[in-house]
Image 1 (cartoon, rainbow over the protein chains, first blue to last red):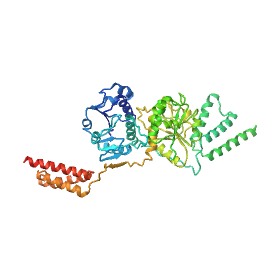
Image 2: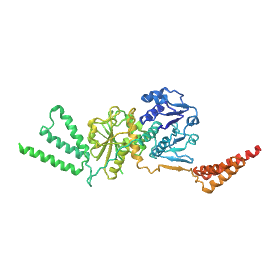
Image 3: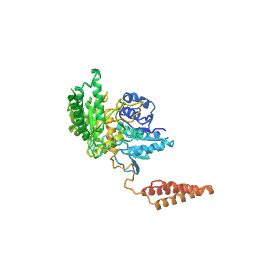
Image 4: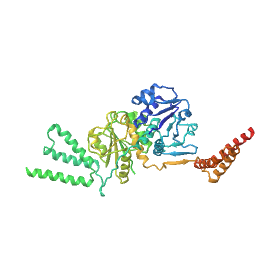
Length: 244
Length: 244
């Protein structure tokens, strides 16, 4: 399946083009198109910042106009921060990338355009899009930069192709222990074990303690569990003393 | 519902602390905790880069050890790039933030820890976590920086709570056309095309008209669009007459 073209429209800073290339490749996108880059092309600063993602820049299509860059695309999204006085479908990044996957699965070519750093896309760009993407950002603080917008889009493209089994945590009405409660239990346990020369030989003692710490923090212990285990440790330690 | 604490463990560059604060606030997270920052605290460069998100830094809890920072937390995630030789649940950012929301809804306190820029979290940090978060990044190119990891986590937290519908049709104040308005447009178009012998040969005329009808009813035309298109058709038809 062909991944979407990331279209940078009149990007200004070479650094941001390079950072966008890295953001793309982090999630497996490698198809970049650039419209009328302010500082010409190729751009040394873009190359410097792209480092390991330089091949994305090498393969980029660079043209003077948005029309040329979109000529072979079947469906184009435009990312916009503010709402426009235009009749267009507006999608979340998630919904947009679902749609992009559906289109790509049919062999259609999809692009996503991103505007220049300061001003974003102009209306004359946006009217060439089939749909808009709007990131559900905090309305009181929206400061996403170009590479971050590209990152979230690429992430959504990739995420929809990743599966992970869900997990369930059953606590039967108890509450999970706080970190300090687990630490206190560990302190008591380690002290008791230390007294019984549990951490032996010496060169293994540290990793044995780390294993115990990992074990107890991994367990979904409830507050009640920690009290139970305190009792267990105390009991064991007392029996140990009585055996002496 | 309390949002998760973003825990920066031994962060090095003040710039990255500031960028993390911005990334958090972009998606409504404002609860930062910092363990043993390399350059001390407060950090001027963090403040400079946070700019509008300075209040996240002002409210940050800063401590010497991870244990202190996690003392009151009920559930802690650790973000890791590489897999660890540890028995822990591993979750995608999406699944982790679903889980975080479920825990927070029960009044439990959640944290997400992020390691230092270069090396990431050490095993001695990770063993204190209840679960790991692994971003489904391109295995051949994984270069997410600290602020980007924070951004994706914050994005997932916010995404799961957004009241933004996945897809809406923005009409910019216009209303979708009624069936009769589309029909009138089609009538005018068909009449104009008929006059130019568009529907030919005769035995295909009916299916050609059906295609046009299907096309115009499929388009999400607004009432204003239909008036625009009436003008277009009338204009074309007039030019046609003047050619006679």
